[in-house]
Image (cartoon, rainbow, N blue to C red; front, top):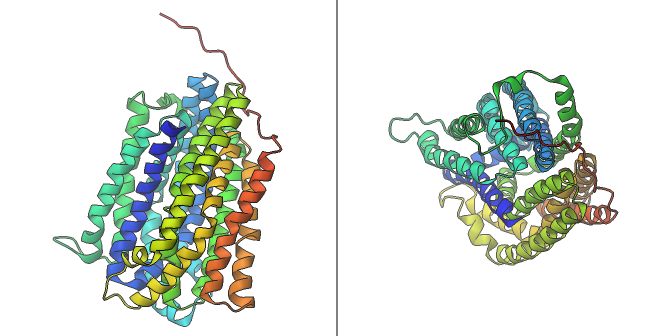
Length: 453
């Protein structure tokens, strides 16, 4: 489990490095730019989430076919997933580029936010959507390799991509050397280029090495029965992720009714708290693979034991992180804002309070992510979807509204409401896990083909 988990934790750390690099440099460009990407990201994630569900389906099927010793089927699943998701990415990228302004128009923004922040968010989104195929390309590669059991190769590819992004960000945002000053659009261009490089390396690995599933050109000929299977398994995950995105859009709409300093603190706090998800998501995705491969090999007891170990490890690690975050919230937040940035002191004050309040839920985040990984690995994507909906639509959205607007707690109400979602989700997930109804594979075992000279 640790061998599977640590590269995925590093991958997630590198993913956060993408976001934090953008936040670090944009925080020195303008606090309104930080607020702009805070508003833009949930809208972008809404379109990403649909394709993300089908990459999850590919990972599940590859894991279970690998566990069942069906290498040929694993390679074909990988190819069909790549073809299907890339097509979706092209469509979503074009559509997103042209409707960015309309998407932002649904947010009931504070007048100051509407004037200073929304136009910058539109600039960022219009560029970012054009790079959607590159973004999805790496997601597919990483997900398929995870299902196969190889998490180190995506980690190395991700490292190259993050390095490119970190280096390019200041040159494109501020116009260093021979580069034009693109501002917030420069952050989008840097990310797109870095993701495109990662996607091309991923294609090379799948086609020309033995590090992952054996993918061949003929595997890309559309197999509608297999695509249908991918859609059937992936639709609940796509619904889960898009529902999560809708919840974030709803929360962003509430936050956008506050002044820019609150919006910036919300986005900055979320990006810092995403660091907390690293060990939780790494162990959750390792659990996904271990449950999938063990159920494919008809070892249900071993799959359950893996889940229980992962829950204990995740809870222990995140308890330690919670203590550190609560003590050093202020200094951590202040790193990402320049001393001359407008409203810097106010953003730091709001952001530090946000981080401290959310430390209460850190242990529950670990438990929830591991259990969701177990359900997905077993192919129970509908269960994972249902629990995620409880987490967001019962545990978070209404509580944020209640505390922030009904009780009139203002920004503090947002921070408190955000902390309650994962607590509710973890309790529901643990109760469902104990039922034991998830221990069933979704692929048929196949006998390995006889060796030939």
